[in-house]
Length: 163
Image 1 (cartoon, helix red, strand yellow):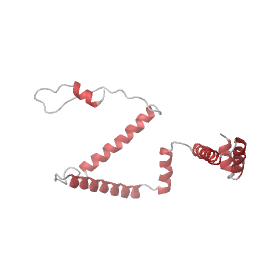
Image 2 (cartoon, helix red, strand yellow; image 1 turned 30 degrees about the horizontal axis):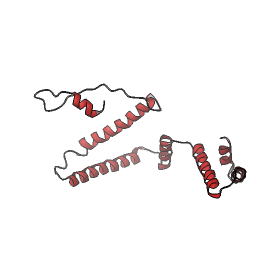
Image 3 (cartoon, one colour; image 1 turned 30 degrees about the vertical axis):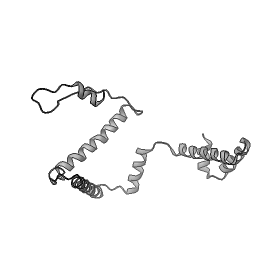
Image 4 (cartoon, helix red, strand yellow; image 1 turned 135 degrees about the vertical axis):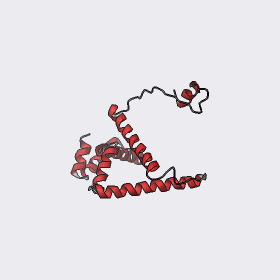
């Protein structure tokens, strides 16, 4: 059930001002199985810690008491900026890794396709475009591909030949 159906099917207790509900939830597996679910929950935990820190240490709830939406938005932006500045300062003081090292660590987390796959996609798109635009025969396209491959550096050539 979605959240609206759960809300509609639950009866509010008399004399209570809030709904107190619990629901059993079955989580489907993503493409990474249980490890993916744990990884996603780990990200959620980081977000929870972020908000807890902003509320308790950076006065997210207590510092601003206005009712203006713009004022509240500006206050939240300032508190988040404070958090980011403190996080950068903490990283600079505690972490000896360079920004380059952190960049390579981040790449491994967000890699969806490999270099090999991306090169294949680019070459296939180029060949399809050449054939479409110049209306060349398959034999001409194969000759063009062979000439193109001969001009590539050896590591790229090996990667594309392995496919």
